[in-house]
Length: 203
Figure 1 (cartoon, rainbow, N blue to C red):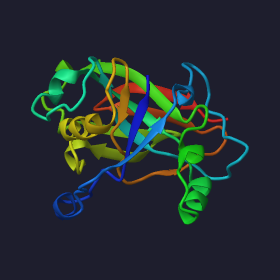
Figure 2 (figure 1 turned 90 degrees about the vertical axis):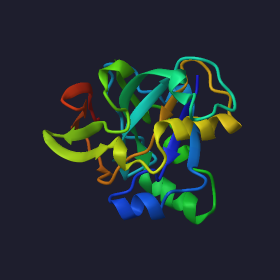
Figure 3 (figure 1 turned 30 degrees about the vertical axis):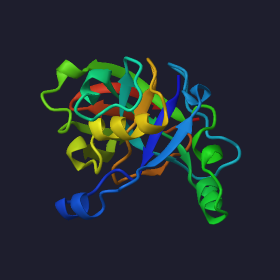
Figure 4 (figure 1 turned 90 degrees about the horizontal axis):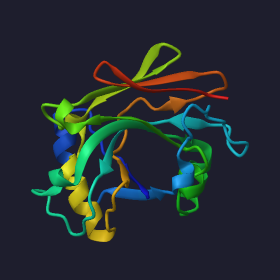
């Protein structure tokens, strides 16, 4: 099982959705060891002083596929969820400056929160899903999948050109504006519409 993550996939207005639409999305991987264990707190790693939350819609792949046309992509997932792509921002900035890959900033142990899953049938339109993140009772991030520059089916088409998708693989579809730093004792809760899908404590 692999975690396939998409970067820079949200626009804030109609103009951005048209002009910033990427020809080639940013893709990086996280190992399964990055998944934060259920009911466990997130521990800020000792190699970073600036870890940020990034709330994201997740897609769980339910069948094996390669070179999937986007018109068939909807057949490859039945569940949609919510998670966090934790990022050691200070480490990431150093890696970017040095032209290095991001894995140590993005794929460390516990860096991927995977919440509960909802049936795709729960949604009337997967391209119009509201989601949000609360920190200590305050909404700090919110988005809608309508703001995605590349929609879910387009992502599946693109990713499957390079990686065979297998049952249980998870796609992190990108984060909207509003990412920010976490500190010890923060309480994070993630919602799709009004349904809470995860809550964690930062240590």
